[in-house]
Image 1 (tube, protein in one colour):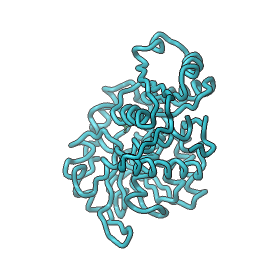
Image 2 (cartoon, protein in one colour):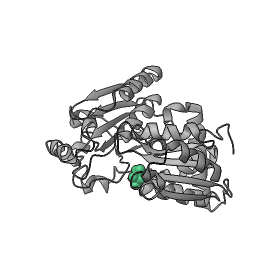
Image 3 (tube, protein in one colour):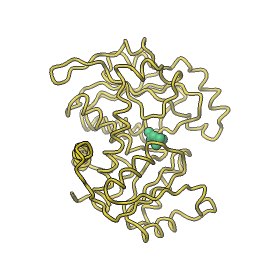
Length: 334
Ligand code: CP
């Protein structure tokens, strides 16, 4: 089981080599088959993962919790609001103390730009068990690994030159973190995909992340471009991943943020836009382009029901693969 990854933190995909990511993807595929066939895989018997949440979750919490049970271990849910963290207990003390009780710490801290990644790294500095990022302000590496697994299942192992449009989309609910589009442009440029990032001018991603994506693309020979038109990004794309995110400078100012977003209500993924995309060839068949979303989606705003429930959509495959990839990551590192 252990492939030299025991004890390793998983905070961004960037810090794992392609070979290490391959080990995780390959184990995730194996675990998916084992679950389907009812083959026991209790690789973490008696082990405990502490899951610390500063934000809400459906997929992440439940995939880790169910995953740990299936691996023979146990996951504790810790809500930052109802633990001593709310009274100011430090990441250092939290990391040291939880390390003494269990075998891994997973953290979601994604809503405040500049805070989550720093907090997770401070816990990791003091913890002597692996620390896993369940979504920070910078990256959502559990989501993007599941997305990569889904892309491979749908389009084959080699994703070189496959065009993906990672686009901003309108949502009226709240300013969502930047970590999913950031994680996608970081990871998929390393796999040689043709990544087109689209957003209105105000919705720029963190400059250091964009720069790293450019360097990744240069190193892998991938194409990486940024446009300000959803139509342009969708044109001839084999895969589209339209989702909402907030303006970096307006986090915490929800009224201003939503007022600005309302100007861009026409940034929706609908049938007209899907008609701009290109069908894809895989294993001697031609199939519709893929519509992806990490969920939850703002239906009727980010995407129409006809697209998310239609033939392009692989959103439930992505959500299922969250389970298999998080099991692989915990089994390898804990
Ligand atoms: N995609 C994702 O991370 O979902 P949750 O916010 O429900 O965990």
